[in-house]
Length: 288
Image (cartoon, rainbow, N blue to C red; front, side, top):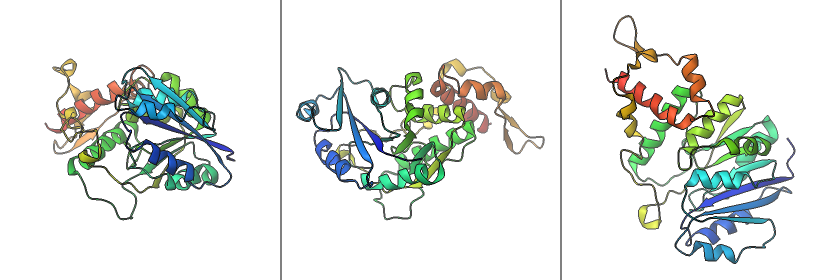
């Protein structure tokens, strides 16, 4: 693939302390002669972020959009994706956790290996990293495991904030996205699987924030993914044995992702809801 322009989509909510810093880093990121299209989506900020963005309107290579209310990261990304024009689209958080100096790493598989999608993994790198929040890492790895069980992929970091897509691919998928918040991560992964696209992972460096620095996701059981251990009410009384059975010895567990369930999981009608319902059923069966 030859690249002349990439689109960088930045969804944000109440990031007045970091937005100008991240934009400076994005502009300085070295990617050769490839042009950058910077697309910012303000998801209903109430801390003055919008006023800062108003001053940037009209800047060359910038597109800025506003949601009248907070709809969620997934909704902000959908808005941004629909306005991209680059051959590759990169998701960039505005909180300084992900460093734009990693853009060459994200772009390399497109240029050299014919990639359709690239995930930047926080768990493949051997670089120094800040030690912080045990339960966040547990939650990330748990959700990645459940996603891998359901999709048959072997990702190390499904929840990563650094995702890059072939431009025409994400523009085609964007109108079908249903999850307005963080359900975007398993949903987009499932839809990429359905299309049979080539997915690569590359190691990236991150600098996690703590709550004093503005981190928004709380370390709760629900946020860690452990809510799936308790099936939702509409699963009560249903037998999960059709997808998760004990083997003949009664000592092991054999996961059986049936064709109908797999098709439902990657369908356009609600892959994220199906993902969590499937995860709940599997988790319940594993405890028996």
